[in-house]
Length: 400
Ligand SMILES: C=C(OP(=O)(O)O)C(=O)O
Ligand SMILES: [Mg+2]
Image 1 (tube, protein in one colour):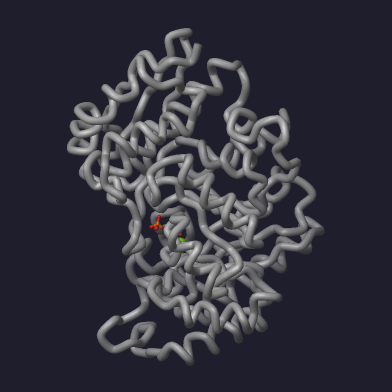
Image 2: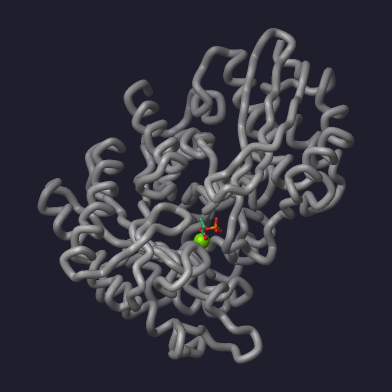
């Protein structure tokens, strides 16, 4: 049986050098799963609460572990996640920490899969899962909260929508990342990397568009399939609540100007994906933009929806977007993430499964994306904690 026999928790390192929570779940028949919580830097105001890792671990040991061990089956994901909610008793995991919750939730799923001797995507997706693989969105240039003195827009993404396979797409994104470096070198611009491994040059956003457009064109020619461009604007980080404007260094844009600016960018650069173009509280402005360009591109809510079905339902009601970013740690459990995906798909919203800027080698999101037939996954282009997910996708494609 998959009855949970033990849950152990420890503090491990994440990619930014901060501590995070790792969970290990074992079952009474020897099943084992290990998972770790990621962590955001440009976090949404309405995300579930991440506690300091040692505190999250202490609270989860006290409140959650007794409700799981000998009580719940690891193969019963809703049962596991209900026990976590019951142990926490708040609506934002502020008692045991969303970091403990998500690590336990994902580790239990892996233990459930292990017990059955099947891969995680198969356990989560079941026999009737779709047959598609997600297109990886690769962050190749970035700034915002992820790098100082770089672009105002947080992420310039390569989107190899024409790739015949996941493996081709992954290598195309890595090639765009390399081409960006070559172009920067040709232009005499030095650049380090931001939190997600994207180049973080000290250039204005207009030059970043120019560089990424050229890099994607070169890779399109080399690989022979379509490579488009996407963005994570992280609009809430640019928005000044007091003045009601979006701040790009010396230049500001009011909401109407921001909508026009993004609509123009969609046309000019043929953007396939635009995440958080506007502030996380402005459903109305999101709806205006989606009305204008929603036929041509995905308008995705990250900080807007925070993987939360209540916020997504409000967005659906208002026509605020046509896509939702899915980050399990924003909501605390895999069940909540699945429910958000289900609601999204029922309403024609594309679910895009995503990493966080602070990551570990945990590759659960690769399985989640395949299990749920998500059309896109956002998980960087290079760097060990990013390639952990990308290489897992390649392995899944090989074996599925
Ligand atoms: C991945 C992102 O960054 P963070 O994890 O810092 O929220 C994002 O904003 O989509
Ligand atoms: Mg985002």
